[in-house]
Amino acid sequence: MKVGVLGAGQLGRMLALAGYPLGFQFCFLDPTEDSPAGDLAEQIVAPWDDSAALARLAECDVITFEFENIPVKVVETLAAKTQVCPGAKALAVACDRLNEKTTFEELGIPTAKFAAVSDEPSLRRALDEIGLPAVLKTRRFGYDGKGQQVIRSADDVNDAWRGLGGQELLLEAFVPFSRELSLIAVRGRSGEIRFYPLVENEHREGILRLSRAPARDLDPALQHRAEDFARRLLERLDYVGVLALELFDVDGTLHANEIAPRVHNSGHWTIEGAQTSQFENHLRAVCDFPLGDTSARGPTAMINCIGHMPPAASVMAIGGAHFHDYGKLARAGRKVGHLTVCADSPADLEAKIAAVRALLEA
Ligand code: AMP
Image 1 (cartoon, rainbow, N blue to C red):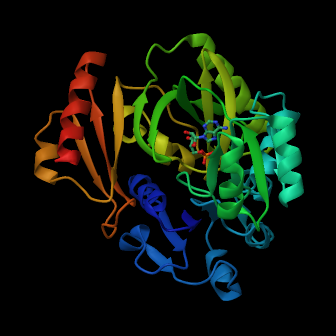
Image 2: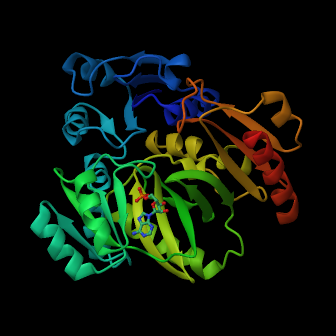
Image 3: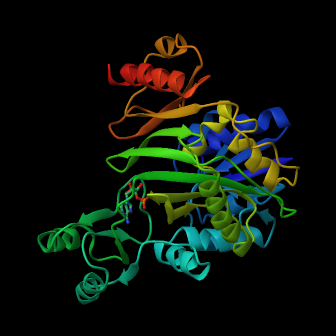
């Protein structure tokens, strides 16, 4: 079975690492040379819409993506020739914040109040409707907190417009969340659905720093509600593969923030911390195999390495710690790897998180 993947970043690399034991082969397409997945598998270096490159990729048995900022047209072109999972419908919703929010609303999934903004008068109208504080976001191409600005008072409006104006935007109400959660879900071609336990995420400067899995003090009712929201999305989008649903927990009430139509950073803990990793389950889903057990093996945390990797030997000296280097050049603000710590108890987990964080900050 040969899997074609649009995007050859670290998510693609981890898909290949999960797929080789299953006997799969991979071919990646990415315009950037020397991408993390290119170390491990064939990589076609070409623009997303290069027709010769797409024809080569279409020779694979199935195609998936690890990046949502691919033109929807590219997925449609490939889908005319071979199976693409998840499909163009999921990509079109997930790559545009307005489509995403509208879909949440249509499915009865609570989300922050929002309004589309295309020029200064529509921003003023949106501010009147939504009130302050609010968050102004680009509809497309935002990641790791880029392409968004919080508007706390009327004084911030001009700055936010100067920073983001000139493209299609969305204004949404600021959600006073107590914590951020995410749910990783997977749906197979047969319609079978499985969910991982909710994960609790800490962000700094818009970048995910730490995920604790399962989320602390996880109320089964909260898990059930998140699963219900994700199920509605998976079914509406005829989804096949892993989907991440990011949520704000406001004192026990869930508000959907966004979806990622792919394996997700907050699911990296599953490599060592769950019975079946999100990467293996994504491949099982798109290749039409039975899905694997999504339960956690025990308390687990994932810590992102931003800008640089800590010394490998020091990490490996910590019992239950695992080192993942994506082979990327070190650069400020860039995700270059992650560390996972597996523990026997919540207290043991916190001790290991502190030990690993000290290495990152040293
Ligand atoms: P996003 O790109 O939408 O995932 O946003 C990145 C981060 O910004 C989120 O993980 C939150 O920490 C914060 N954020 C985004 N939208 C909101 C909002 N409406 N209210 C409060 N915080 C937000």
